[in-house]
Image (tube, rainbow, N blue to C red; front, side):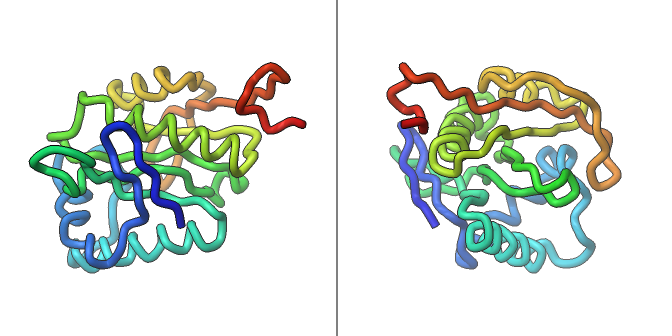
Length: 183
């Protein structure tokens, strides 16, 4: 499992020690309204199960969602959300870019910063042919992130009984690209 440093973030896999802080973000009413309904029960137990699922993604697929932690300043090390890549069996095993941040972190470019790293990882290291992202049709802020990342609207889909819009980006290999995977 990889830890990545960006200009403002530490991206690292979540651990059980992060469960309490993660539950506070995942079950915050403004965050939860955009995500599939979680299982009933204790949010902390569900957070632990989700963290275990993310670890399974890393083990099985070589990539998975990271925890997003602030890198500098007074709040260094504070968890502000999760994001990264995961394979979605319901969509024929295609890979999704996902992200969810605490409302205090919205509008600061963190999702776009994470998205650039995740797409680069997916295309350059995992050699994925394409990556998609979905969100509810009225989540215009998330759609704006997808567009800033170069993703294009493709269609409407249903995922876990939620109507969603599907954005996608394909890997483009150019011989003049210094980061190209072709040799």
